[in-house]
Length: 511
Image 1 (cartoon, rainbow, N blue to C red):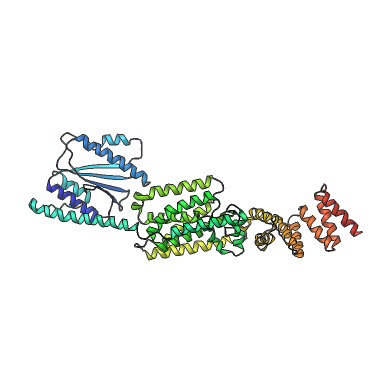
Image 2 (cartoon, one colour; image 1 turned 180 degrees about the vertical axis):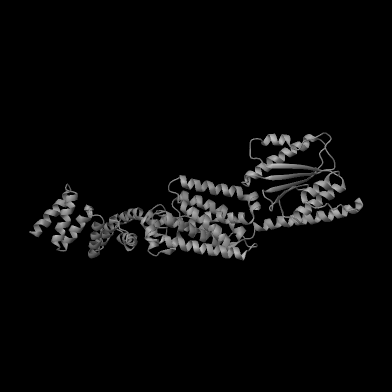
């Protein structure tokens, strides 16, 4: 190799890597092949600089085909519509036989949306022209002897290698800022809580879940705000626990290493909260699990992709995005998965990462903006969530839970489920009927009577409510009202023998 071409290679590399706005994406061990990305160019442009001489044309053409294939792979991996590659060989001489830099490679990529590769061969005869075409500046060819030039090359080489190694060190430090602690502690907590649920009645028992802090919308409406956090540590069934435990075991330490201990804890809890908030807004079911917080970890990694895009994409980005997309699609297709919680957690993790930022890459303006957006968004969603319109969607599920509690003679809890609907003026006769049943069983006869009167007011054809109301009137001596109520019940269900017997009793008492 000629020393003048060595100087050309290393001075070009210094100009691009050290002085320019080019990000290293791949470097061979001997530093003779370097792939650099020009972040400042549109469309995305890669420069591949190679110090190599090709004696035969077929060898260089094979290498060009390799460049096309890798460029197309990168284009797809980075979700780019177009990708330009400037492929430059710094060579001592031309190949012996003639070569064409394009045909075979273009034929290989025909019919696709290919990456565009432009190949240049810099030899001693045309290197000056190629350098000026690439960089838009004159090539500074030192007018010194080769032995002196060797010293210059070593100096430039040292600068380039030092710069590249410092960049590698920065990247390594970015992924190793903290030592995992909270991820493993949180994992232990959710396993302990699962055992506690099983001991208290079963992790798949709805009533047990509600009693131990699962998300249940009526209780949140009734002021139990802590239910925005406690569901993060509970899981419904062994499979649910195993899936989230494995996810936390592998994903949690990675995020904690990047963000540090307390940033990670904030991200985890905040995204867990926003996951429960999403579920509160769009799902009526009892729910629990760390899924929202785990999706928040994905959101924090997406923030890393925002601040260090190319590093993210060439290390983990493609896999992370694929996992997020697959899980969200899976959540929309498979019934019973609380996708609202997943999406809420993903958004919460992204916002939380904006607030705390990466440890050594703080941006106060961006952090303040993230905080303002988070506070505004959470406040608006809570305001909507606590509106009677949002509570009304939970009616059917709450009625099922209340019936179960009444059947199990847990009347206080049944009343606790139904009272928020009463207080918010939800005009569903079934709410007042079930509420009256629990109140009557608790000897709160007068309150039960008032709720039965509301039940028949909202649904005049509710024969069970008319019958129960007639019983109360009869037992409290309000015989005329009892007569009207039982007559209405019999008119609606004339074949019901129990109704007819009470009608006979009331008629005799009136006479």
